[in-house]
Image (cartoon, rainbow, N blue to C red; front, side):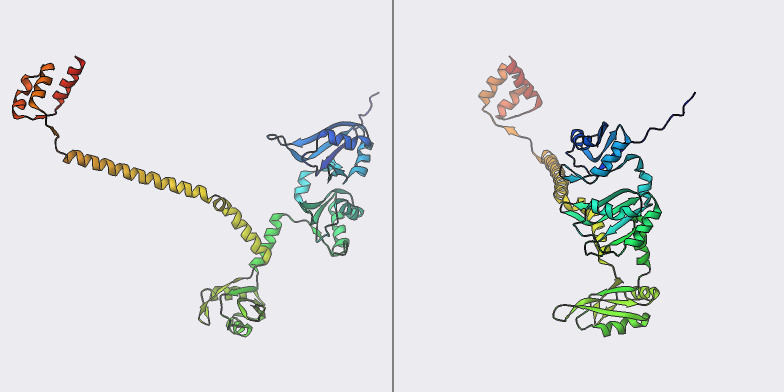
Length: 375
């Protein structure tokens, strides 16, 4: 009789947020009280072999794995709380899609992973939950990944705006970076608030209203002032319609108020300005952090060009000297010339020069001297 093969219960656990110094032996000591372990693997980088911060613990029985999940999740290992969940429930495509994922912010720093898990576990099965942490502990926000989108929506309806340790928390659907950028771009495209700067201290709200009211209905005008009540030279004008604000920006660019050239543009939120400055800094970081290398490169180029110019100038001068330099005449005593030329057997060639008391160094004379030295 053929028996139907029974599928073996899954007994593999995913262990996240482990410290880089945690090894398989340390995890074995941590999980072995829950039951018999089949294998443990700490995932490491292929090149430098450093831990990637997560591991897999495989038990022989699923009941032991479930026992470890219930009692060891969020427990400390090497001083850091770990996250334990079923390995077969970790679907990367589901995590990236954001389905069933909830974002929580404005949390008190005392709330940890375990508190977050206990708070949201009543709305459905949780695949993972995590509080974002830095060097100084909690950053005040976290994420909860539910198995179903219905459980996530239910938690948002019930917990959004609730108090967590006397702090009103925001609970909403997780949005990817592309979604947030698209929303920010959409809100920017339909702006109604404009920013004006570089005007004088004599310009107040009434003056700005007179200048900009011709473009449409204005809901509010504000001139920023210092602690003494004096204008700081910039302010805001908020229109009722986006089209009116856009027309004011287009028409007032490069215009003057009270004899001063002003700047008019869309008013930006602080977060938007910070992200813009951050992108600019990241793009120019290489140039900003390596000025010495650029200076060295420029100095080397200038030095090489200068060296080449000097070399060309030197060669030009040498050529000019060769062309203009007269032949050198060496004056020697006639008797000494007779003795030298006699040893070299060239008396007949230099008799005329001996009589005049002078001789010219030529190529033939040089060869004669070399021949004399060899003899």
